[in-house]
Length: 116
Image (tube, rainbow, N blue to C red; front, top):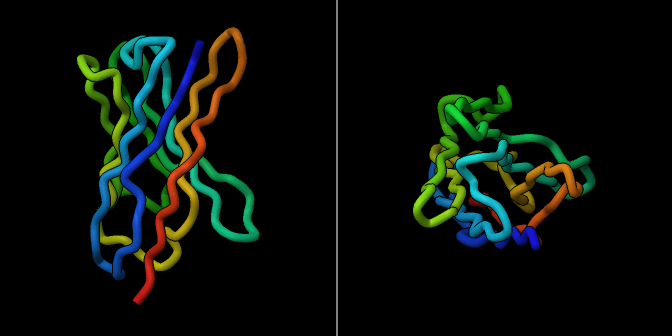
C-alpha cells in the first residue's frame, strides 16, 4: 500500500529556509518519478519539482529554480525539498505525489507560510 507522509512545514520570514520531507512506503523512491506540488489559497495545485526514478534527473517550476532543491535518500526511502530564499508567494500547502500503475497518490500535505 502506497503511503506518502509529509513533514517539515512551518512559518518563516521572507528570505528564510525550510526543508520538507516525504516519508514513502509501498514502493522505492529510487524506482519512480516523485514530485512536490503546492497549492496556495484560492489557486490551483501546481507542480514545484520532480525527480525521476532511474537516473534521478530533476525538473523545477520556473518560479523556484535556483532556490529549491529536490532530492531523495534511497536508504531512508524519503523525498526532500530544500527551500531557500523563500518568498511570500511560496506560501501554501506542499504535497508529495507519485503516479503508479495502480493510481495517483498524494500525501496529506504540510503547510508553509512565508510572512513578515
